[in-house]
Image (cartoon, rainbow, N blue to C red; front, top):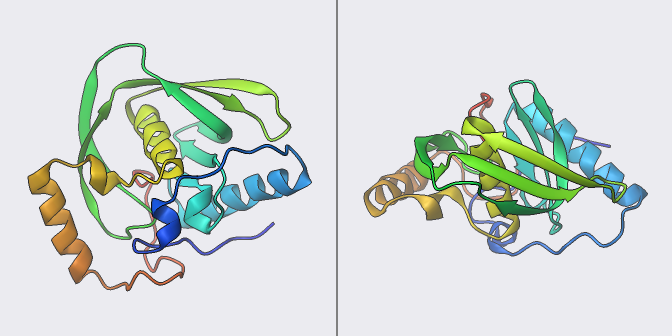
Amino acid sequence: MAIRPVRLFGDPILRTVADPVTDFDKQLRNLVKDLTQTLDDAQGAGLAAPQIGVGLRVFAYVVGSERGYLVNPELSFPDDEEQDGEEGCLSFPGIYYDVKRRLNTVARGFTDRGDPVQLVGTDVLARCIQHETDHLDGVLFIDRMDVATRKQAMKAIREANWDGAVKLSPHRMSDRIF
């Protein structure tokens, strides 16, 4: 169990669809621990396995008092309500922009031992669940921005003081980061 380097924008694994977990073994439990420890160290709200270089469908989250992880998540939406709000990403240190997401989300998946679990989220937790599941599909939060906002974000990314290399983020993260 270790704190792992967070992959930054530009790393191809962030654009690769993660494979479903098929083995619910000690290696998966160690991955969950690494995700959790890395997320705690970065002080973020969520972290997906591809962000630490592992192409499996697993993410960890900490939103308020809600803390956990989900393996092989599948999302559904109980209604059509949406929310706008500021979003960031540990793979885009220091970059925050508004992103439209669904207000309410239901995620079904598994524990690291293969037991079924359901996670129901609203507001920030719903945003986090969608953001992290997007990572598992090779989708980044900049892909969810409207055209004008994405243009601003890409300019900020080009001007950022990081080069896309695999390294730890130089910024401490707040709980609004995914």
